[in-house]
Image (cartoon, rainbow, N blue to C red):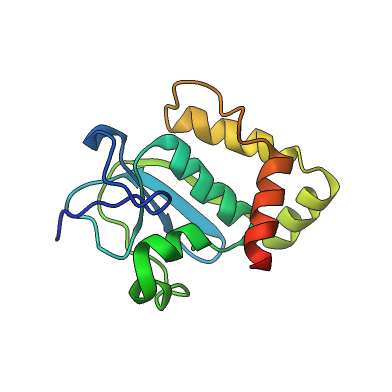
Length: 151
């Protein structure tokens, strides 16, 4: 129990406590988004707002890897070494959970990148985003994630 907060996307300690979220693996094909609580394990990925949680989730949907280059830079080597482990999730309120079939996800994204838009819009609604997440369009997300993976 440490109470420390740094957004895994931007590295900032911002946003109100009510906006803070935790994004964690709940298995290799499952992802869980919960409300952040001060008792949260230090190795869980956190987001200061629904937008940054959505960006972490989109990274996972496209690549199967929750640890984006942004998260690696913010969280440092210690957490990167834990990358293959399931992140512990504290007892925060569960807001949404994803379960995907990886082969189907890859095929869907190859055949129809706009499919990601539907997933991200539903996530934004589940997380209580104030407006639809129009700026996280599928092609932009796929290009960004592709460029990050190439680095």
